[in-house]
Length: 297
Image 1 (cartoon, rainbow, N blue to C red):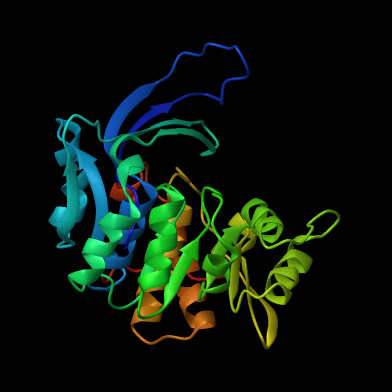
Image 2 (image 1 turned 90 degrees about the horizontal axis):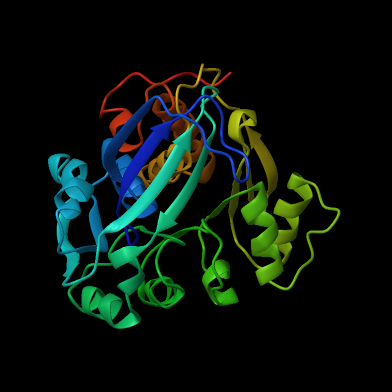
């Protein structure tokens, strides 16, 4: 798992503020987060043995950022500490309908380089399924995709400019509908006028071998050379959707690492992610190993 780790500072509000608006919140909580760390913890909770490659600052926030990973037994030997650089921070607003808005300040995450990835790879730290996303510099993502000896799971979130060879190496590329459209643009295609399923088909045609497009409460599309299929969602009453997409990605990777096919891995991940929205918080909401997960409808 190569990616970001943050401290999430989450404020609950009656509704998301409009431009220039000030609202009174009802609570404020600091907790571990970051897309890479979230996905690493989800993969661990879904049964995988996980090594996390990332960077934190030499500040008081670093132990908080890593506490759930450490408690869950994730290998942190490849986490770098940057002197004089703050640990990444995410500022999150969650409203009464469980929707959220997020601003990420990268901090140490932005310091990861291709040379750092070279060092990890030389030490054998990129074996197995390698999961990548867009909260670290594109040069580190690109180098990890190039050096990974096995399967690469690419979650293009947030969307960053990476070479087309990174996207066409993804097995699978995991995106939501907005990220899928931007991925198609990076591959030289045009998403204009395309619906979600057509965008998925266009990504395949552009050279991506496998695609999973998440659709929130509507489930997901799974696509490969045999066509596009729909995976349903579980019917749950969401408390907080923050980090649900990362829970999904980590669970997909864990099941793929265990030998599951893409359809089976996606179905399991949909259930795991549904379990993650039943409680407030990000990593703290992820189902424990062996927990009973919601059924797909």
